[in-house]
Image (cartoon, rainbow, N blue to C red; front, side, top):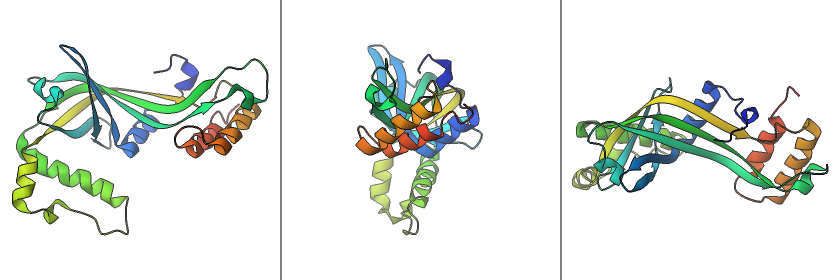
Length: 208
């Protein structure tokens, strides 16, 4: 996370809400040969204490789950490069604005008979975002194909013990300077989801 505390002004509710809405991140754990990473969709409970996910049985993280394992899930949001020319004031440097939330906790492997329910709940959450499309359900799968697929993956659960978020959106700049940069971010479209970054920048630091 960014070390400047001004970019850590979001409370746990906002950080958890962001992570829950995104529902996708990079799971990281230490391994005998170095860091182990896996990109995973996950379900975050309403109270933010549990993150549920599944992994391929062949994933090195699964092989390390003989007992609960300390892990992090890094959840990234919108981001964009910001040119120093866009601030309209002198002595600025290039930077990158972004939103990211880190969930810290202990990951454990769950009993295999919990997998089907997990898959149903995961697909239901994502399919609900596509309404009025008729939601896809696991019941549409041919039973033997579904069973074969389920043998390849395992359910896991992370007990969340910490949450931290970086909302680096120019809060350390005067409002008019941040607004000028946000206008250029929106206009140039450098990076991913820059319209979202621009909107977040315009809304950041409203108290200043």
